[in-house]
Image 1 (cartoon, rainbow, N blue to C red):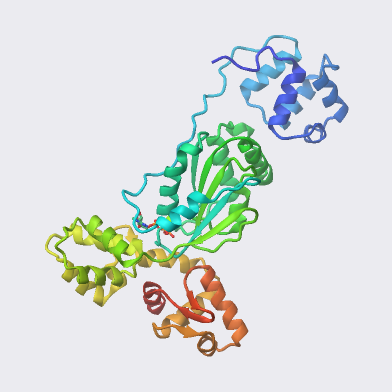
Image 2 (image 1 turned 120 degrees about the vertical axis):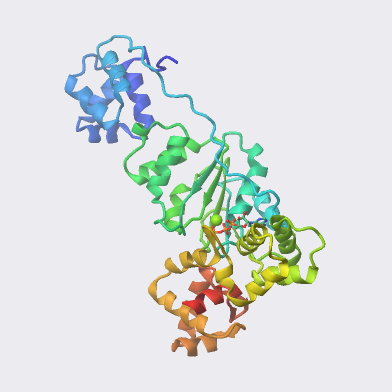
Length: 410
Ligand SMILES: Nc1ncnc2c1ncn2[C@@H]1O[C@H](COP(=O)(O)OP(=O)(O)OP(=O)(O)O)[C@@H](O)[C@H]1O
Ligand SMILES: [Mg+2]
């Protein structure tokens, strides 16, 4: 492919590169330490013999690569541009990971994600819930189904909000996404705000579906939201996030028992003769949590000598130790939620683990934490935002069974 800029006038080249970098004439002049009149005259074609140093400064300010610099020089000397290779062809991004074979028990939630639209601004669905509840599985499944409506591509960005490593910086995520969208590395601005502005410009008028997986917080998320109504964003997070605009929050609960059994038997490769009451008890012992059910099923499948009853006996002893299979472990997933808490909330979490499993009121929590009721409520609210605690009715709280095991062990 030839250089699309070859043969263009100096003014047209400069204007094109400046607009691509989202700079005004004043901003470009300031960056290049040139008089704004010089930039204006160059762009309008009034300055026919620009100085070599001016051209160098402009090339630096526009962060032009070698090929673009050659084109600029040729245009400044009134010659046709060199025949250099153009940018590589941009492929439409199709980044969604593989879908789950069959999504169990999420029909209502799927309808919410698929039905969220906005006429004026970008529609955003924030799927939140505790570790391993199936946020990513739901988001990816919905995205596969919606993909035909977004012909300009589907992006999947793992923000690693609760991964062992630190969360991805928004500027780093933006740079990666911009490259995926066809912006050459040398044209990606240095400042994160400029990257976010360029990202919104590139996405304006495009129909792209964007999955932002495992967001840590709003600070990380907001720069990655496009502006126009043509895109759809599905966010997943262990935290309840506040998104402005047309955002729809969707909190995932544990699976219904029947869906849990269906998932377990399918993954364990069991036939229908397994006793229903034992299966129901197994999935209950897994807290109806998809991650736990998946691990239990994988363990049973890998050990032909075990029966479902034997698995149930094992789950009755040290559940968290049993719910680990290679790199997958419920305790490790919960560790990462705990690690992200500030010190004070960690202390509250451990203290609640020392209490009973049944629900408790704000007054009990205040006594246990040795603090006032309003402060206890605030602290409990913060744990609820991290999905480590549930409010089953006003001011009545409960920890999920596996979360309680985890907090108690700490
Ligand atoms: N409804 C479901 N049907 C079938 N499989 C599911 C379902 N929900 C989750 N899973 C499976 O359970 C496991 C955990 O789910 P997932 O990774 O989506 O949880 P998550 O909420 O995103 O966890 P994390 O907070 O760690 O990111 C995955 O293997 C996933 O494929
Ligand atoms: Mg996830």
